[in-house]
Length: 242
Image (cartoon, rainbow, N blue to C red; front, side, top):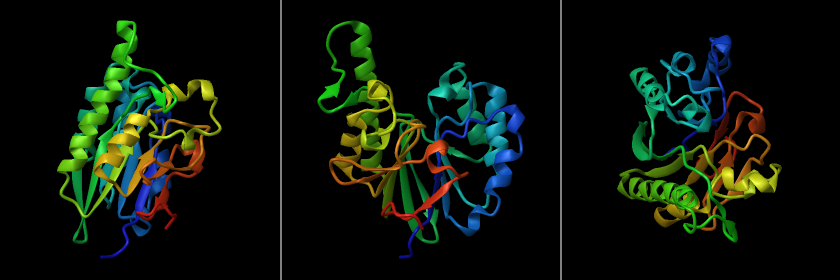
């Protein structure tokens, strides 16, 4: 079984003024990678016209594209319209679910979605107190449970979790600690560790760090564009650059 090459990026924040620009940067990607994973914040303000630009930039590539939305993509309450645009363009969009991508006889399973916040062990919000606080934590808990089920149900040779929010604080280093609870949650890592995965890809933390690891040993990579400083980066399943 040959080594898979995973191209990944997040936080591309495309707008109408960038139509055609990102596509130029990913031309020839099929020579370097077998699949492209995009970890959310595809747009700036989550508008339908911006979503249309993303669909144009990512459609028709010679390799499969799997994406999730980010918080920016929800800002204008057009997230479902953006998902529909991308899917109509042949892009697989995960919304707390999984998919299997066949690559030269190898079944690559990808599960995930936007994710959400809440913080990390020892410094996290709890489902206690005001209804708003309980709803915040419950939202992440429900997402993590859906991811756990999606990973368990994947019939694949290898599994990757694709998210916008981070599962660990390792990859947030460089961001102000005060905002960690709004950048990720330990519950996302728990879901991945419970069912197992080869790699966890996320974005969101523009000032964060590229590499981390879950408590269960899954390698985590922050592929926010300001972190990787390229149109995409390419990993092997062990998290090393190919």
